[in-house]
Image 1 (cartoon, helix red, strand yellow):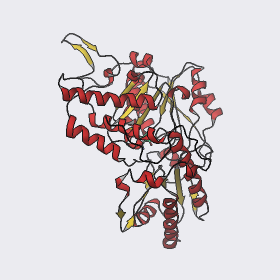
Image 2 (cartoon, protein in one colour):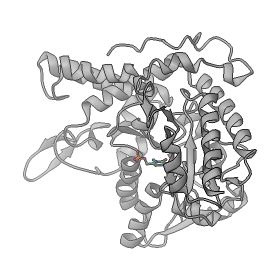
Image 3 (cartoon, protein in one colour):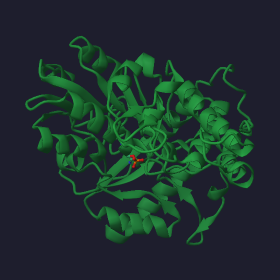
Image 4 (cartoon, protein in one colour):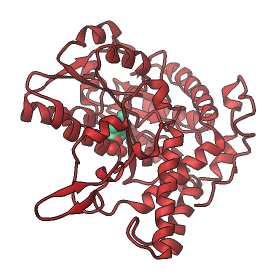
Length: 428
Ligand code: PMP
C-alpha cells in the first residue's frame, strides 16, 4: 500500500498545535486533497456540510482503491499466487492501521464489518444471544442512533431482556446520576454512543466504563461519529467493544471495524458462517477459525479495507489532535454565528461536543430549509437523523444539521448563515 503523502502543509505530529485552533491546519491546502469539493452545485460553489452522514474521500483513498483493482485484484487468504498475496498483504495492512488508530492491543481483535450498524448487530446477535437471559438488562442512552436501539429491541422480543435508557438534560448531556442508578445486578451490557450524531454531545465514556466495570459489566462504544474527529484510544476509554464506519472516516462505504477484547471475542459464537471462518469442515463437525477470521465469513470488501487503511494513513499524516483542535474552533465560530440569528434554535448545546450544528426554526420546515440551502449549493441533512427519540425529547419532528469536517472553512459557515438569512426572507 502506498503511504499517504502529507499534502496538507501540516508540520506533523511533533509540532505544537497553535492555541488559535483555526490556525491548527490550512483547510485550503487540505481541500486540494479532496477533488469532489471543487465543483459548483446549482451554480454556486459546493459547501459540503453533511459530514455526519458521510465524509468525502481524499485522493489517497481513491488511488489506493484503484491501485488494488488496476494492479492487485485477487481474493484474500486463499491463493499462493502473487496477486492473492499482494491483496492479502494490503488487506492486512488496513487491519493493522485500524489497530494503531484506536490503540487496540492486538491486531487479531480487529474485525472488518460493513460499518457501525453491522458492528453493533454482531455484538447483539453473538454476545447477546449467548449470554443474555429473560430479565437481563442492557443500558443505552436517550441519544442513540437507531442502530444502537433496534438490535436490542429484537433481543427483547426474542429473549425477554429489558432495555434501560439513560436520560439527558436540555443541553444534551447525560444525567450521570441516573446512569449510575440504572446499573444493577441484572445489567449485562452498557452500549453507548461516543458522540451523538443528532446533538454532537461527546459522552464521558471513560467515567461510564469505570462505573460499569466496577460491577463487571462490559461496555460497547458506538464510535461512528467520534473516531473521524478526535483521537480515540480504546484502552484509555476503557471500552470492551468499539465499532465505527469507514465512510464517515474519509474512507469507502461498505467497510468498518469492530474491535473487541480477545477474551470476549474468543468466547463468542460466529455471527455469520461459511467460508473463511472455518478451520475444518466435515458433515459431522466444523471447527471454527481463530480471530479475526471467525467473524469474517465469506469474501470481504477487500478494496474497502484497503481504502480504509489509506484513509487512516492520510489522517495520521495530519494528526487527529490537530484535526480536533481545528474542528473545535470551527464549531465555536459556527455556534456563535448561528446563535446570533433570531429564530434559530440550536439543538444540542453540551459543554463537550463535536462539530454538529443541529437547529430548528419555527418559521420553516427543515425540509424546506434544506431545499433553499441546496439551491445555494449548501449540502446539509434534514430529518430525524435516525435518532427519533432525540427529536421527541425536544418536541420537534426533525432538525437541520450542518456537520463539520476539517476541510470546512469559516467561509462555509458564513455561506450557511447567508442562506439562513434567505430562508428568513422567504418564510419570515
Ligand atoms: N451510530 C451513529 C452515531 C451514526 O451517526 C451512524 C450513522 N449515521 C450509525 C451509528 C450507523 O452507521 P452506518 O450507517 O455507517 O452503519
